Length: 408
Image (cartoon, rainbow, N blue to C red; front, side, top):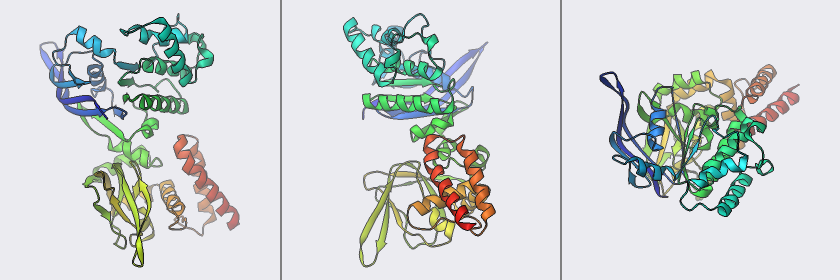
C-alpha cells in the first residue's frame, strides 16, 4: 500500500488579537491507500482544523504535511488546487446543488479534472451512481430525495473521479443510525475497491466498526481512541462503564510469533486485540498442536478461564508475520466489568459457548426469573444496536428463550 498522508510534528495557530493561540500540537500521522481511519473528539478539539489542512483548504504553518508525497508547507494556492483535485470530499449537509439533477451533481467533480470530456463524464457518472444504488434517480433533483439518498449521491460525487483520498466530515450527522451505518459502509467499501484512503471525522460511535483505526483528538493532540475501540469490541458496555475502565487499562505489544497466553496457565488477564492478528492453538501431548482459529482487530480472548475459574484452555500467539497490540485487563478489572454489566457477562459466556469450549451460563443458572430479566434487557438493547451487534444478540435471545421454556 502506498503512503497517502504523512504528517510530522504539525503545529497550527490562530490569531486572537495580538496573541497566537495554538490549536494543533505536534501531530504525527500516516495513512496509506485502502486504509480507513476514523477521527473523533469533542467540539473545539482541533479536528476541523486538521481536516482543513489535509484538504488543502489552509496553509501549513509549522511542521510537515505531505499528500501523495507532495509537501504542503510552502505550497501556493495553485499547487494546493492541483492536489485538491485528487481528493474526494463528503460533507455532513450533503452540499448538493438543488437546481441540478443527481447525474449533474455527480458530474461536477469530473468537470474539474484536466482530462474532462462529456462522453467520459456521462459514462463514469452512470457507473458510480449505479454502484451507490441510485440508478433509478439519475434525473431526480435533491429536493425529491431522502437524507440517505442525498448522502449516497454525495458519496458518488466524491468517488467518481477515483480520488486517492476521501475526506468525510460528519457524514452521518443528518441520518438515522441504520441509514448512517449503511452509507458509511458503502463509502468505505467503494473507496477500498478504488484503492483510496479514507479519513472520517465523526462523533457517531455506531460506525466505529468499519475500521480498526480509530484516533481521538483532545485539546489539539492526537492519540488512539481507547474508548471508541473498546465500544466496538464490547458494544454492550455503556459509555459510563467504558470511562470508568479506561484509567486501569494498558497497551502491550507482542512481536511476530510471540506467545501471549499459554494453555494450562492460571488466568490473570483479559485481552482485546487492537492491531495485527493472533492464532489460537490447541495443544495435545499426544498429537501436533492444532490451529483452532485466527482473530483480527477488535476481537477478544482470555475470557473463558476467567469466567469459569479454570486454567487457560488454549495457547494464543501473535501471527508469524505481524506484531500485535493488545489492551490488557487485569483480573480485578475484568471482574468489575462483568459484574457491572449483566449483558456483557451474558454475551461473553455465549461467545464462549459458540466456540464449543464451554456451556453457556448465567450468574444464577437455576433462576428462571434471571433468564427472563436478561432476555428483556437484551431485547431492549437490540432496538438500539447496530446490525453487527444484532447478529450476536439475536442468537443469544433465541438461546435464552429456549432455556426459559425448558425450565418451566
